[in-house]
Amino acid sequence: MFAKVKERIDSSTKPAGRPASGTGNGGADRPMPSIVSRDMRVMGNLDTPGEVHVEGIVDGDIRCTKLIIGATGTVNGHILATTVRVHGQVRGEINAEEVFILNGSTVQGDVVQTVLEIAPGASFEGGIRRRQGDVPAAMLAAPVAPPVELETDGEPEPLLLATQTDESLAEDVVAPVVTNEPPEAANSGDDLSEKKVG
Image (cartoon, rainbow, N blue to C red):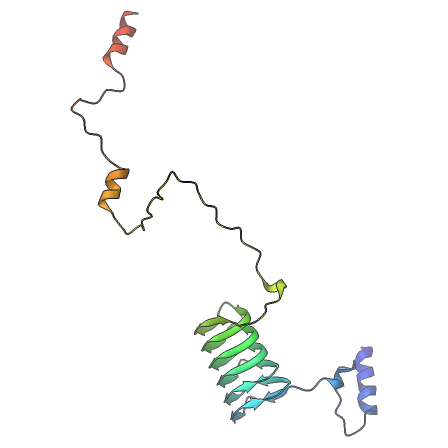
């Protein structure tokens, strides 16, 4: 309630040559984002040190700090940025530290990134590569314990895939015992005779 009153007072006392930021807390130093509106089509490259919002169509490459592609936005070209949030469509490579492919969006092209999030309901067709360079320690996964080696009695046993068969190995592992004597019954007759007598 009071913030809105203060905003009106601040905006009415600002010099005419400088637009009001609308934040009331020093946001005038922060540059306004460049906006490609829904009814606009840009044919060519965009290069800015600031933020870009795309709601229309861009046929060309975009280089910026932060890129937000709205639900109605389409980019046909390569993207180089620090952060990219895709709500719409991208046809081309995305190279950014943080890439967020959100629900309902479509990306056709490779993604080179440090952090990648693909939400359920998003469509992605392309390759994923990790950005080269130092990765902050907070982004690294927990260390994995080294594999444990088992002691063997000499030669290691050969490993077989489930679809492989090796007759010689199968004979060694499951070799039937062939004898000329009939197998013994579980309960021999001697045990029964002793029970009857005694």
